[in-house]
Length: 127
Image (cartoon, rainbow, N blue to C red; front, side, top):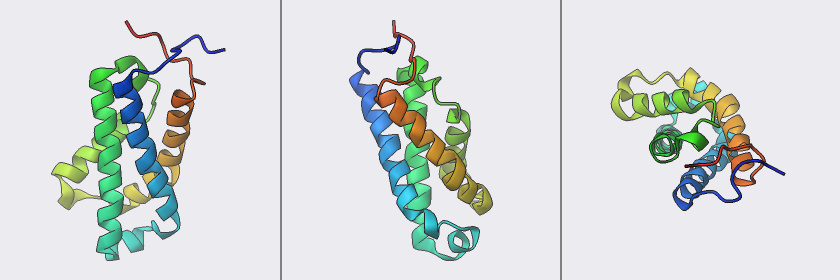
C-alpha cells in the first residue's frame, strides 16, 4: 500500500488527465512523428505542438497548485520549457527535439502520470 495520498485533489487529477489525454494523442500519432514529417506537414505540426503545449501548461499549473505531486514528474522542467518555446519562440522550434520528446519523454511521462493516478507512486501527503 502506498504511503502517499489516498486521494488526489480534484484540480491535480484534472491536470494529470489533461497531460495523459495529450500524451495518448501523441502516442496515436507516433508513427507519423518524424523530423521530415514535422518540417513538411503543417497539420501534423499544429497537432503535435498543441498537445505539447497542453502538457507543458498542465505541468506548469500543477507546479503552482500541487508542488509535491509535480515533483513526482522528473521531466517537468523540460516539458514546461518546451511549451514556452512553442508558445513564445515558435520560430526557433527544433523538430528533432520535438520528435525525440514525443518518442522518448512523452511515453515515460504518461507512465508516470498513470502511476500517480493509480496511487502507485509514493506521492507525499499534501499539507
